[in-house]
Length: 491
Ligand SMILES: Cc1ncc(COP(=O)(O)O)c(C=O)c1O
Image (cartoon, rainbow, N blue to C red; front, side):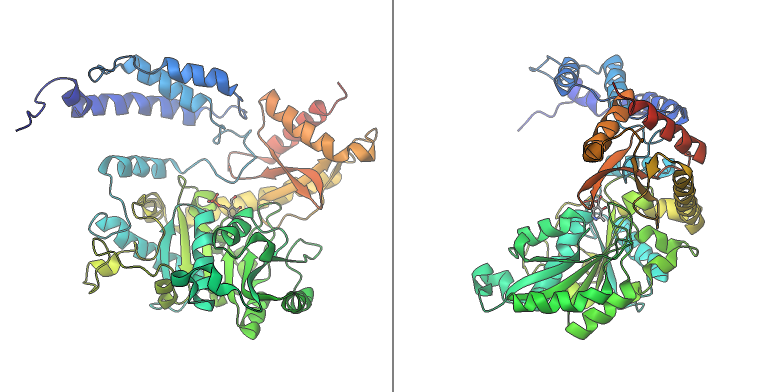
């Protein structure tokens, strides 16, 4: 019989008083971190140096569990916080993940301690029930027929896009799941049609699914960088002539580059007419649905087949938390066509009917719904709507400010909270325009006050600001423009 370790350092690692003490000391650090609203971007660390610092914090004891060292834990947490993008700072304007609602972080901490993976009801009872509740709550804004739609959570928008495309592919080509891609070889090759600015995860999904990146038909955009519905039918006809069997249309509700919203109602009409699955990548912009002011950007969402919605973007909870909605819940049964006696019961019970393991890719899945649900349960929809509305208003103000500047240009009008622009002082040679933007982005980052990103628009680099932080005001944006002018001075 094995001796159970009654004392010693193994026991200490699980000691509840130690748990409490260490949690309290970390909490004090996080409180200080959240309270610091100084303007900071990212201190980019040399990865070799950072590796050295991290290694220096590892125990050299290998024969028995090392004794707890509170000072070392403090150093690790300081290093973790200090080397991150300072998402709570007004200097953060660069990416689509946000500073989280603090309460959602508290619940994520609870999830990590109670460890209830959520693909199966028995492993995560509350998370599975709550997924259904959140699905109903959010469907109020989508408008699918109650009782006939479904929602699963997935680890990120990329996986949600892949999962939805898989459902669509299995519906159009039911034989492929079992018999593989060779069966596809025929007169026409399966293809998906997307807006030219679609997120790269969609083309990646086409690669993963064996559709092939070459069979991604890029639909032309209009001046606002939305799919141009006047040119979509000719483009689909041309794809057919080229030997492509388009089975799925992917629209974006908030493109990554400029935050453009494709016209869903018009695309739904095309999809119906041509018998196509319509998937909406709303990873960035589906959050606008909760706002009475902004919901119209997604007009037609009730007619789509599937919708990916990243709550870790515009719902301000810890990553990952993605919701994948299907208009017809029956279609989700066709995504993963498997049997596995240890998890999927052939005869569902009251309990197993709540499992999602047969509909999502993950087996062990983070109970990612919990931070979203608790935040929603505690504060209600208005918290999200107010923040989103502020961010979109602020972005429009930023646009107006840019329009007043002689030395900046804005290639698009912001529909949501993303705005791209170029710094163009009169002394700049036209041929240097693109490189200049990249250099400015790098210099702004290095100077450490602001964190912004860049994106190519029509092949020319532009600076990109994503307003995710309600602590940012128009004055901060004005400061950013000054910072850009300084960074752009000839060196
Ligand atoms: C429009 C869009 N789709 C998909 C994704 C990918 O989502 P995730 O990072 O959650 O995998 C992003 C992320 O930036 C996005 O902007």
